[in-house]
Image (cartoon, rainbow, N blue to C red):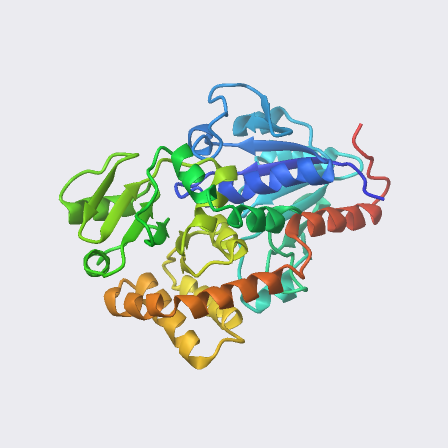
Length: 388
């Protein structure tokens, strides 16, 4: 029997929106599919509004999609719920931690970590971490194997994707809702949602000179600056301009619940961070992951670990094609040769992406696993009370 608990999620928003993207998706799913009471403590409402435009920036408290949204600073006066989740190692205030220590029974305290395909993740998932004052915190690791915490996936997501893609008018309607015209007939559509990157000129020139029309949908962010430099103009949100065979569309910020439609509509998805990385896999499209660069090159190990897993059953030719383009993108190399190789392999890449997505569907989703694990952890503690 599923027990309803009160959940406190804490998110420190960073510039690239990945943390809030994952947090907001998890919060909504806990409330909608698992009937949990969810309170989200947030430190940047303006950034949050990029993916949830209905949010009120100055409200002391509000409810969206069944989730109570609370300013970060209010945790100092808050009484902890039954479950406390630090997203990605954000630090709770000393006052709130003191309240956790005073609560009886103590809440289940979790740190939900960043996603990785590295093998050590399976070994550390759900390991306890003793804290000062006799408190216990558990580390929850999302992942790609049945020994990890899984991936975020709504129960109806795959059916929604398949139904959407069966509708010939779906792409046109989705773009019209964003105020953008449909791409040219038979165009290759590329969604670009990446971090800032140098050496885009060769790639853009290659697409502009291609025989097949190319529609490049560019999401807001630093990469638009490099494209504007190549264009020698400033492309405003909602505008479209063309250079040869290449049409460039400057997209607005898109509500999170609509972003999947862009992934489903694209032939190639270039994504960044964590949330869009996972959604591109559920879209079952050829994609490139622009991983967040780290000073100690930890991102290289993380990227290699995922590629090893993703391409485990691919033939050598397909593996080389993917590795060449992903490496070129993530290491700032000239993209043109690897891009031409990638595009020429799109049918095989599409088949591989669909096979990979189907293999991931055999794994229980993250929110469901998290609810089950919390219930088990709670049952091992004295009388964790259900929500009142």
